Figure 1 (cartoon, rainbow, N blue to C red):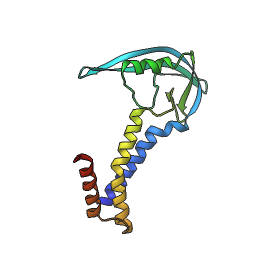
Figure 2 (spheres, rainbow, N blue to C red):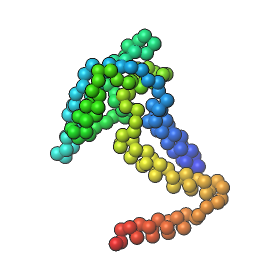
Figure 3 (cartoon, helix red, strand yellow):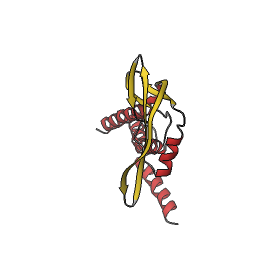
Figure 4 (cartoon, helix red, strand yellow):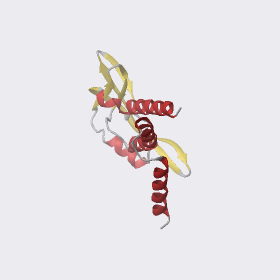
Length: 162
């Protein structure tokens, strides 16, 4: 049962990595900015979040598309950060990265933002103990669960008992 869980979790991890990092293989074309603005999204406990919105058009194989995605994942931030992202696009012409399998899917920035890095670190952090345990069970090589528990307990005590 444990091995089935590890296989499922590994497949899920690979899917998430593919889903959020596939844009590195997308093609690029030239696009034109139609509109730029910062929108207030919501208020969370006296903290307002904003969304940078850039509407743009581009062509692939003679067909015109319109989109407003900047990053591969949704992005909300404080007003100054959202405005800075908007101001990074001063020219009317922009480079648009599009999915060659689905040209209506596009982005303007092909880089990672902090939310994606945190998600990836959390995902890897969650998966490593399970993958290590699966490796130990399959190969019979490695440290016992008791030794790992002892190490983790001592590490946590040394961090939080000071």
